[in-house]
Length: 243
Ligand code: GEK
Image 1: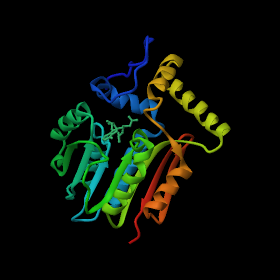
Image 2: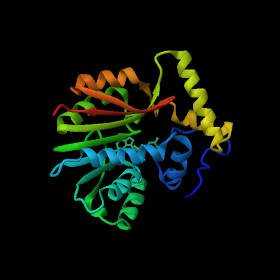
Image 3: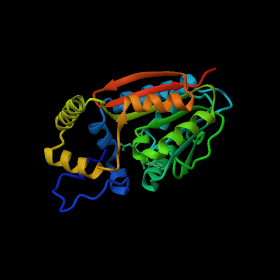
Image 4: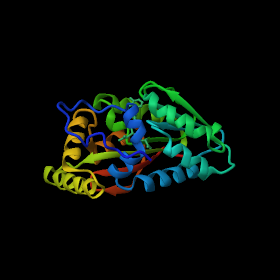
């Protein structure tokens, strides 16, 4: 695993964050050290996907990056047949995913699609995964995507939505961020790295409150919504379409 040192030297001007080849190369180290319970949440989402998958339907992974979820799902499903479409608009991420799929038993069950998740056609979905990706869309585009996901789901189908979140209360938002930066420091990031990354993500990663996510899910039609993981400024939700 290549170590993430992207922000370890002072930048003259911090450019907006992009999912380019440099990021793809260090992605696993970056996420492992920047997202609390990243591995745990990948494993549980793969287990949930296996649990809710309905034969003859599809799983969609929107913003699939280098395929950690898909590869974990292949292991979870064993010999069981399934069909997954994994979408990302970063070619370097998909190149890594492709290489990893070639080395994975049953990897042909996953189809990679290069494109914008706002435009991807979806149908007969029993599981849609949006892991840490809705936050990168302009806020104005989020309602439409969640509505389209709801429409593409078969009865009993689920959306697994994980996001960085903020609190409605500014003081609690600050507390959550303080603990988040503490987590990053404990994982070896310097204060300068943390601050430059924060600047690079400004206006690129736009987190919302849990209440805003709940409202959007309900407005799209989801009846049952469960927060199955919460750590300060991170939350993972499961929303199910009525059977
Ligand atoms: C994981 N889910 O490891 N269309 C397609 N892809 C996009 C778009 C878009 N509009 N915007 C961003 N992406 C992954 C982690 S990373 C989260 C997701 C993070 C892609 C982007 O290229 C990147 O690969 C991914 O969404 C976000 O389970 O790095 O914080």
